[in-house]
Length: 91
Image (cartoon, rainbow, N blue to C red; front, top):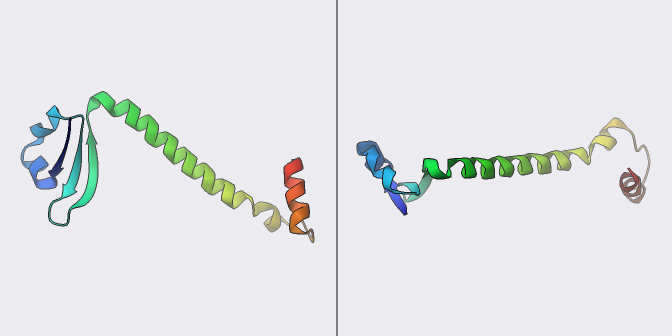
């Protein structure tokens, strides 16, 4: 089961979380989503999903940065962009 509760509701009665698979926590005043409470039954699956997502994001950021590393080290010197791309493909 799924539900949406406000922060005050949860702090007043924490036991209401026991009957749900996950609960969306929202600010009732602004209707902004503040977080997600996941039952212990799904905890490992959610953790694995989040870890994979974080690793993928970090890898993308590193890949974006690494494309400029050769230029900073002076490895490519005065080569044109096409030559640099062909050299990277060969590696």
